[in-house]
Amino acid sequence: QPDVGLDDQGFVLGLASANRSALDAPQWALLEDKCDLHKLLCKSEDKRRLQLYWPESFALPRERAEAVLALSSSAADPASSQQWWLKSAHGHGGHGSRCLDSSGAIAAEALAHNAAGGRAPDGVLLQRDVSNCILLDGR
View 1 (cartoon, helix red, strand yellow):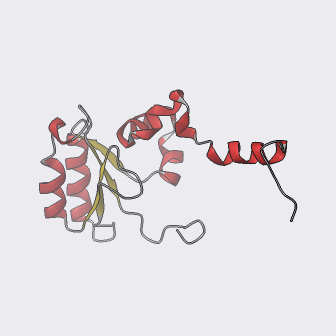
View 2 (cartoon, rainbow, N blue to C red; view 1 turned 135 degrees about the vertical axis):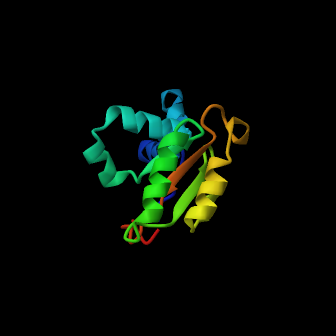
């Protein structure tokens, strides 16, 4: 195998592209906050299209009233997923996420959050679990 150094343009470009991330650019900072991302998606996307790739979600405490309605209708419908995820607005890779599996626990835990629980006014994202989701490369 030939010796590849920093004077090889292809090698340097390869390193640069591997290091590049959407979150490296300041204009993408809103995507790093799950609650801000949720807000952007809800404002910019048609609801029918959005539900194809974004699970039912609520930024708490801002969308508390909507979350209460969704949780009560979810509890009344045995066919709907009873599992919800409570996600920290700034966690990555599952850090700060908890799965809540009963409607009573969800309501008590999720709706107890206030602005002190995270970045005001949206501290956590409550998101319905996606059962049988499609995984990319098994992850």
